[in-house]
Image 1: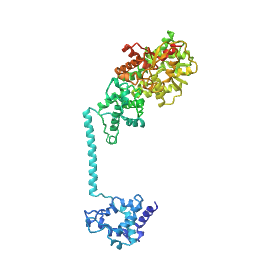
Image 2 (image 1 turned 90 degrees about the vertical axis):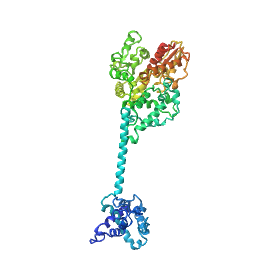
Image 3 (image 1 turned 45 degrees about the vertical axis):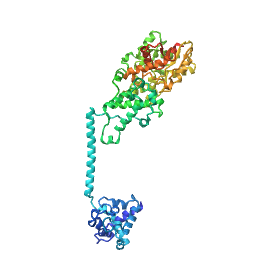
Image 4 (image 1 turned 45 degrees about the horizontal axis):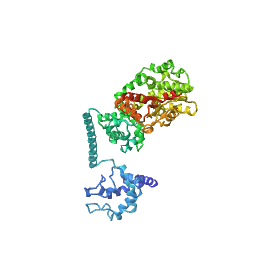
Length: 579
């Protein structure tokens, strides 16, 4: 940096009247420049009168006087020392042939006319050219720049016209899919699909709707194209919203034709986390105005109005406990933790609270906790839906509901939440931590019962002469890896003959009750549940057991529909029967 600073200092010094005396109107360097340089370069900096139209090699040495390029080149180290004074000096001494003329930029004899002092004076003067000359544009440059801007304007106008024509043809503007709620890893996962088709072999929906569009790989490829077209640099520059609204609507529908069971994640060679990806994308489609489906709105509106998805009034939430106490199904009254305190909160969930056919799950759970002398209670009328169904369909109401629940749970001073609903368990354990800290332990009932078994507090006295097979709920199994706990409980029941189905654990076939599939595509869900009943029948078992009210509800309905002889029971029922 010292030499460029020195050059600046010298150029400023030489440009003052003191450099060559007060009488000098022009510096020595300027005199030489005007006498020797302008004859070829002219006032404009390109080709003087003697060689108009010729290719002047001096253009590389002395750029246009109006651009300031000389000053940059000679007063900074941006282009390097060799390009600066040394290179200019060599070119002046050596000279160069001017194409199309008999002259040279600096004739060999030119060096004889200039002394070393004179050459240095020219070099010191050149940086002042940018300051001395006003900025002017040549006509050629003006034409070029004008044509460039006209071209860019025409391209922009053309793209906007095409966009308007497209919008008119498809009958409306395609919604732009927001992706800011997706993690970077999820955007990478959209690009990670190799299209192998392994998901096709295991998807529980595809056998009942054999369209390529419902297969995970097809959804990912369509989403990849949509995201690329709507979030490309061209889109950001011109605001061009790509995509056919009808095709986007179909893609949204295909995305909801899925129980979000997670089977495709298990078999995917790239290990794409399809559960989180599908749920995040559903939230994006909802924000874009293309979701949830009409079939989901009944649940959504009921949760907003009644705090449950079953369109039941809030006042009926604790009726199951009142009736069970009257009938002697409960040995004692359950604490209401909205008025009392306890260490354990039994979070009942909406399905076991309101569905008359599933309330036995709530009753059996409460009585088990009674017999184990657990200090527990329920929230009574203050219990609100966990928001699972809202989260699965991507509705923003979930955040408000879940935050309210989390604040309430944290303020109660409880140590543990126990729930017998796999959907509630999955939501509280995995989704609530995204909103804030959980100041309590979250357990599904099967985890709690295994703990009681290991501590010797849970013992069985009655034999159950049953052939039993177990259905792994998606929210317990693939989503939370609770495979051993229910089997450990079933294995400890006296008299039970336990038989596994062909597809179990992480490869368990989904019953279709979750992920909003039942509300949006009830016919397909019914077929999926019927297939699972046939899997159970093939084992020769007389009893099908699960640990999820949603699964029990769906599988019970399928048993009736196909007139199956198998009996559906929740695991809590068997545990109570064996005590």
